[in-house]
Amino acid sequence: MLRTSPAARGLLIASLVDSTGTGMYVAGGVVYFTENLNLTATQVGSGISLGALAAALSVVGVGHVADRVGVGRALVGLQVWSALAFLCFLLVDGFAAFTFVACLVAVPERGWHPLASTVVSAVVPQEQRTDALAFMRVLRNTGFAVGGLLATGTLSAASGRALPTVVVVNSLSFLGSAALLLALGMAGPRVGKAVALVRAQDAHAGKVPWRARLPYLKVAAFDSVCCLHMSLLSMGIPLSITVWTDLPTWVVAGSYVLNTLVAVAFQRRVNGVLNASVRRATASMALSLVLLAAACGALALLPELPLAWGLACVGLGVLAITAAELAQAASSWTLALGLAPRDGSAEIYATFELGFSAQLVFGPLLVAAVVDRGGSAWAVLASALLVLLPFLASAVRSAERHRTRELVPSH
Image (cartoon, helix red, strand yellow):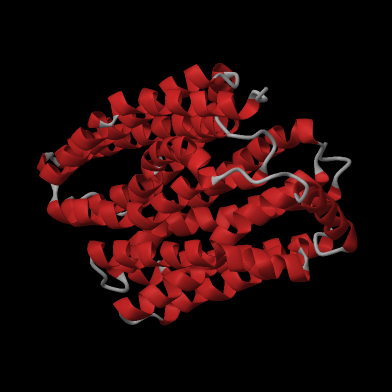
């Protein structure tokens, strides 16, 4: 597949490059914000949540611009935008400026994913698209791991002056990604024609009423809750370490490296176990909720533990978060495809993404508020996750019944 599709190959290589910088930023960014910019946990969470909200509101506009200038050109432009936006963090001197830059950073990041999926759908044969997207995820996780290792070295330098490096390297990675996309023909006419052909075919598909999508959206809401693993890893772990413990800051980056290495090693195996089964995917999503609750329980204990036990607790928490991530990622795609009211509709699959977008907005704010309140708040969050378990299977059964009615022709 990759040998015969230069556009797909370019997209995958570029993803590996920019994810390396992103991994360094995610592993060290929160420490930079709290130690160099002197922001509180609530301020960091609020700024990132507002950025995610701005990105969610602008993603349709980004799509319209991409339609006019070409998806390939838009992808290159978003990478350059990201490079410049991340450098603006070096100029931040307060919460208002931080929030503004967080919005600048989030918009191109959120816009990248649907455009990249559009290119994959256009240049990769239909039967190989899932494998291509899965391989892209593996490559990105690999890049995240490499970036996390680089961040570990930066944080180990124990110097606040070293922390801006995580921002600069991330910016350079986006510039390198943009250069690769250009060199490998992403902005060329071939990609534009392929995307236009796919969209012309999609235009003939009918619309599914929003009322028929509601059961599907309920399952997407559960997926949104399970996506909390992202905020727990990127904010819950780092903020808990810096606010509530005396653990060295390199532990923050080390936890991120542990997460990505385990994810790379086991993601494909987990996908194989589900084997596109809705029943297995439902059980996997339920397991994700339980694992997230376990991770919250580990973080609840963190402020009360001595240094060595605290380090072990962080490790167990990261492993629980990673297992929850693997279970969620595998079950999410299976349920999105298996419960869709109509097969083959990109618009319907995009509806499922609303849950993911909601987590990006509310997850960081929720996690920051929990960190500020300490152990008891983590225990409350863990209990709330477990309370949701009985309702998951019911939501999936409802979506299955509606799908059956949609797909069976009436007489």
